[in-house]
Structures are given as C-alpha cells and as structure tokens.
Image 1 (cartoon, rainbow, N blue to C red):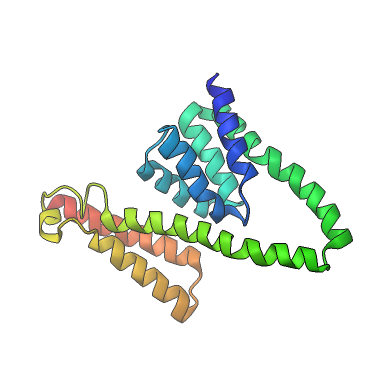
Image 2: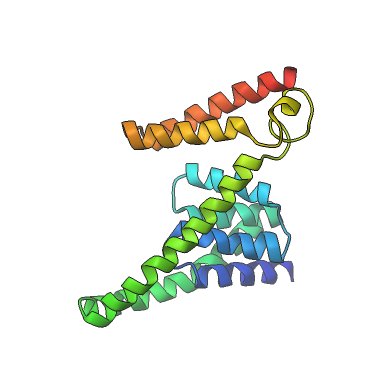
Length: 197
C-alpha cells in the first residue's frame, strides 16, 4: 500500500509538472511535505540541493531522492516511475502535435498563457527555499547558544553566502558549480568554527 501511495503521489506531481523541474518543486512540497508529512521541509531542501548538484533534471533527481528517503531503493524506483509516467505520455503526444501545428496562433496563445503561470510556480519554490535558508534551523541563526545567540534568529551566514553566490554569478559569470563548491567549503568552515565557540 505504501508503494501505491508513493506512486500515486508522484504520478500527480508528474502530471502537473508544467514548465520544467523547478516548477515541480512547490508540487513536491505540497504533496510530500504538507499533505503527507513523509519528510520535513528541511529534508526536502537538502534533497533539492543534492538533486541540483547531481547530473540530470532536478525534478527527476528530487523524485528519486525523495523516494529513497521514504522507502529506500524500491521507493526510488516507484517514485521515479510515478513521476515519469504522465510526462512521457504527454510529451510523446504533444511532440507529434507540435510538429504538425506548432507554428499556429493557437499554440502561441497557449504558450503565452502558460509562461506566467510557470514563472509563478518557480518563484514560489525559490521563495520557500530562501525563507528556510534565511530563517535557519539549528546552528547559526537557530537555537540561542554560542554564536547563535549573538546572531539572533536570522541565518546571517546563509544570507551572506546567498548574496555572494548571486553576485558572483551575475557580475562575474562564475560557473555555478564553483559557487556551490565554494559555498559548501565556506559554510562548513564557518559552522564548524561556530560549534567550537
């Protein structure tokens, strides 16, 4: 029964994953974190981070990692299969339709309506992750112990890393992989030092 529930949950997510991987993140949060409480928002954020760093589409990777977290390797297979079922079928049909009618006005009108909705979904997912990163859970910006009590409830290290990464990518066109690696090293160093205080 657990496998059927997991398959159905990701079947629904995959069916409405319009606009790419980032657009599916709020759907995963709503279904897996809010509705089912299978994992926490903090765990989902960690999974999204890992999914972003590993090769492949982020939504597919996230589905696989969430399935692994919930029901180990069989869960990964079930979640991935559920996530892929509807998109593969729809993509095959739409591919044929687009080849035949893709340049018509009806298709252009549909795309012009879908773009703002997809942008809203992506913005919603980004905002959830930003709030979690800024608010923090434990460590710096969490419980009022050590340096955390001085810094308060806001995760200032997270804000600094986020701002620095954004600035490096936008201003200097730094490869995002280097930003991720640098943030990981700096974050580890700062949090390790904070634990010793």
